[in-house]
Each structure stands twice: as structure tokens, then as C-alpha cells.
Image (cartoon, rainbow, N blue to C red; front, side):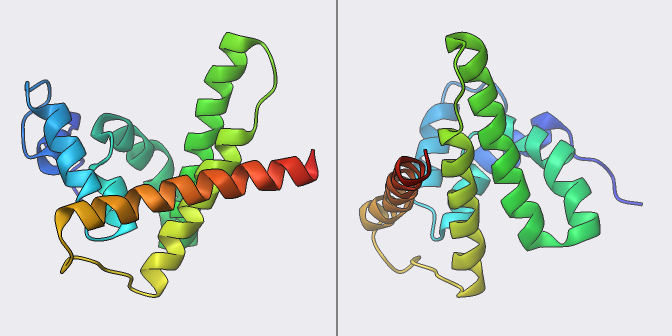
Length: 149
């Protein structure tokens, strides 16, 4: 039986510094933006949120449906929870983040299927690629919603 990793262990593993360390944000930004794949970007991005998504969404879904569906479903749930927070605050409906995050999840899955890696490129170029995935997904989500709604 596998031992469950703690939040503190997870953050240290992902950030390279302990939970609450003064360099946490700097480390997260450097590691995530400079990641050598879009999937790796998300391994480093917001490790506290990632821990809970991993434990409560990704791992249970992965057991029954496999990695790809678990990744896409985790992004969907994350987007929905972000939209839910916006709906509670603004008191108006929103699905933009659900669609956007789902598209990013699909980009992660597809980039892993084709084994897209850019580790040989300089940090700045890797950062531009990772940001490009995020911006392109957002743009496509906005376009999709403008056509549908």
C-alpha cells in the first residue's frame, strides 16, 4: 500500500523549498515557466492547489479511467471551481474558466501523446512556449464561447 504524501512534502518536492519559504513564489515561477513541457509546467504551478487536486480529483479518477482522462477531468474540475468562486463573488454565471482550463488539460494530454519537449531551448524560450499555450487556450475558449453563447 502506497504512503500518502503530505502537503509539506509535496510543496518541497515541487518548489524545491519548504512550504511557506520566502523564495516559494520565485521558485514556483522559475520552475513552472522554465519547464521543458506543458505538462511539467503544471507540475510546478501552484503546488498547494495542485496537491489538493491531485489527492481529491486526479488520483481517484486515474484509478478507474487512466491518466489522460484524469488529467482532462482534473483541469475541468479546477476550472469549474474557479468559475464557481467567480459566480459566488459576482453573482452571475460564468463558464469561461471551465472551458479554458479544460482546453489547457487537453493541450497537456495532446502534448504528452506527441512527447513535445523543449528542454534544449533556453529558459526564456521555454517560458514563452508555456505562456503561449496558456494564452492560446484562453483565446480559443473565448472564441468558442462567443460562437456558442
